[in-house]
Length: 119
Image (cartoon, rainbow, N blue to C red; front, side, top):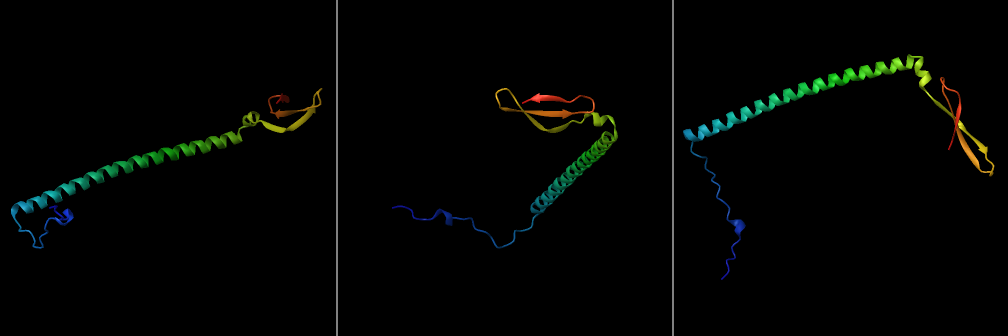
């Protein structure tokens, strides 16, 4: 005959009585607390190191941001920066021999003459 007993019902019995305090149980409790304290101290140490790394990275970024902003200001004030800029003049359409239109873009720069590009 098959055993119809449910295996989930075979759970360990939990005692409602408190365990008897012995020296070994207290030493085990002490060991667990000391281990937990050491783990937390180590975690705090790692967190402090990580905080210092993050502060240093933020400081480096602040310095780079200031340098970049200063560089932008210098480029805005420099007269040579205008010669490097190029502006596009609207497309001018011309008709070739076959009657189709070809677009030319005209570019102007302070250092160069106007020139046309066939597209």
